[in-house]
Length: 267
Image (cartoon, rainbow, N blue to C red; front, top):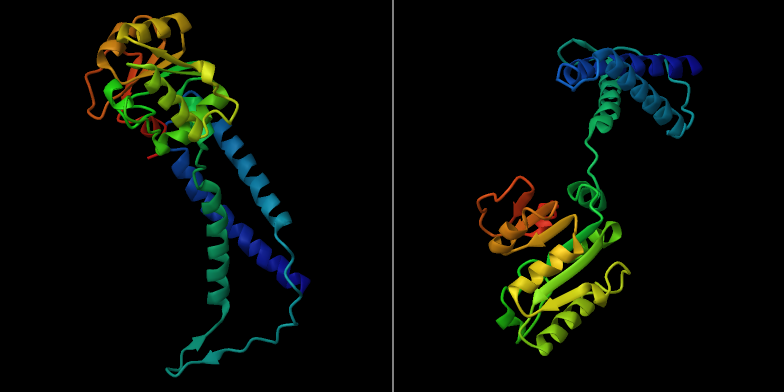
């Protein structure tokens, strides 16, 4: 029985080796930057060897099987002899294929990793409310209601984990300001610890919002006004212009997206 198990393992290793040779030949035929091929092959082979050994050690031992009886050919109705070796080979090929394919599956990054990568390790972010965080797009609408876009909540909470976030908007009266703060509070943005009410800023003019941004000197500013994006392009390291229609690019440091969540791949 032990001999049979060893023989099965040797068959499996051989088929994995054959399959790996094909995979690695395809992988390293591509241009991989400045790394020499010998280094990459060595690293890849080491990683695969560790993975394979770990999988073998992790897999639970199979229950002992009864001593197999001596296999005899099974005659078919046409007189052709059929052996069970074909089924065993197929199973081994399938196991080898599954092990390698699982290893080569791309690992999907988390939203937090995407946010950190997209913001290029920025530490301070300023963001307009209207048309970005709120459903409303004008100060006049805020005199009636303020509605936080549910699809943007997860992104904002992730940003607060890595960055010092400031939200800002132009309002026409004190009641609008209260509505916005209440909407943000009801959405749970003040409960995570990353955003506080003191970091939600209000002004009465568009120039006031521009002044806020310049005084705070953020690494990123998120804005829906093309005019303000243009004005700040010389002063802010990076900007994200939120616009449903892809606008003309103002500068190399200005990016655009239909929504904040789309920029981070959430839609």
